[in-house]
Length: 153
Image (cartoon, rainbow, N blue to C red):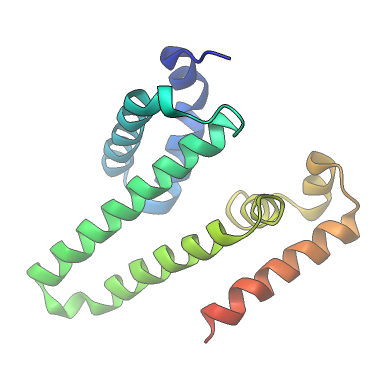
């Protein structure tokens, strides 16, 4: 299957932008991050593993660009003012939590992201993923425990 960059951009830009915006809470920063992500997509489209889901691949690139943005912001905060320690810790926590989510298997990651970030109810997730409500809940809480064990120390 051959992918056309313009089609990919048109289909996925809004979803990727909304995700990045929800993380950075600044429209201009989100636009810059997403633009950089799609530049990477364009440059690496020929290297894309066709066995993977294209959205997941683009999402991963965008999340990595967002991590880069937070790292750069952290450095700027440290240079400007050492009194912004709380903000830096929050950014570090967000980066850490996102990495923990990325370590989950795809099914659990979908459940956690759909519920926690996008606000889907467990019943809706069950319908989307064709799972029983009890299975969705069990997987969600198991994923939180897996992440929480390392998050809480």
